[in-house]
Image (tube, rainbow, N blue to C red):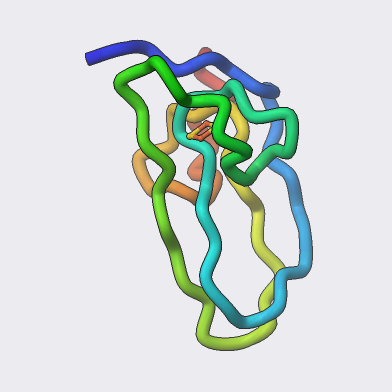
Length: 78
Ligand code: FES
């Protein structure tokens, strides 16, 4: 399996509306934490996730979280 690019070594805390989102798994997107199609030509595909209500979230940017798309502190061990 390919190794994702580390987009940043800290999460992005943001408030998101309810809805469907596509989290960037490859690290190439210029629109982190979301997919912008930059995974084309790689083994990666975006990960869809759904929020049922407006929510404050800490999005993983290091791409090593075991609880994607959310930060689990994995960036601290990179
Ligand atoms: S740009 Fe990274 S998964 Fe699409």
